[in-house]
Figure (cartoon, rainbow, N blue to C red):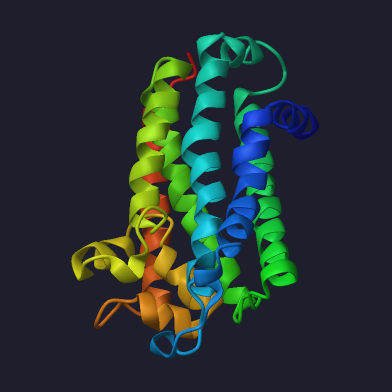
Length: 248
């Protein structure tokens, strides 16, 4: 089942392009702007592109979790695939599990490509705390996936799932600093961004302590508290999605 889901994802050119390849391409595109490659004493010698780099991770995480996965699952239910599978020895949960595994693998590949491209082309230092980044990445994605699964649980059509996913994507990317750098946001929005999935502040702090200090609000929450909050959000949203989910 995992092999089948992987083949279906690879045939989805939009998801491969925007969910897997786009983050690395976006980072390289922004890195081509000379002003973003100039270090400043005000940022501790970091360049704007160094501070922004963790945001590129959020693109793939958010697009896959709140747009791709809900749209696929809703399509399966809309076409009666989940119902038909329930009449076979295989349980529909197998499809959902395979879809989630393949989706997470695609996010990991996207992150690896982005980190490698940033290091090889733009000389962006790799994450200083790789284990902490992996933990923040995992729980942040889980929180996003919980949100996406609520959408998949209650939305009736794939068209509606796509529309809701787009709205969620725009809102989450706003708090993630994709449209307005977090250093330029009011403290209230930056504070909220610490607790909005996938917890970009925790990702930034794990990538670079200096960048984390620059983007944090005054008295920002400790890293592990942010991770714990993301984990709590993931558990709550996943529980709600499981309770609301309909197979038909």
